[in-house]
Image (tube, rainbow, N blue to C red):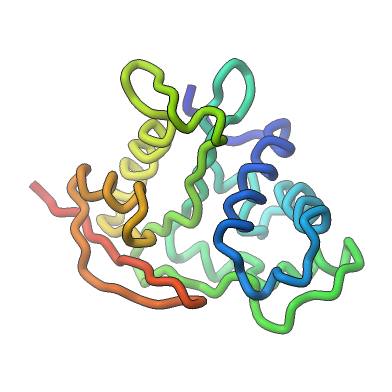
Length: 188
């Protein structure tokens, strides 16, 4: 079942985000232990201006547990998010990085897909002939079509799925040593 995230999803969502951030290997987080990062994500999940808070998340629930999560928002919201995670680092008494953890990436009038991940145990399972990440992506694309623009990493399943739903690449950009694609919705 696809739904908005709730506070009770915190532990499951925090673990999903933790694994995705570890995979991305942000230089700014390399001095933070896995336990500290887990705490940051769990506490930040309830904070209204944290990039990975429950207000910005959509989850796919299977048997009462969030097994997939997508975080996305319009570009106007990105400026209001705490990309330094300053208050979280201070609250947990961890030395904050000198650079922002996540740099703003969204272009004006764009809907930015920050993260979409599914628990590896459920990555190759389907419900009503759709993969769990396809359920999340369908929902993401429905919301992104409102602005007509989307931003994702190239070469990922998300980018190829977006192409299937009518998004075409218009620009490549580099952030934190990673390439991102700017996609536009091809109106029929």
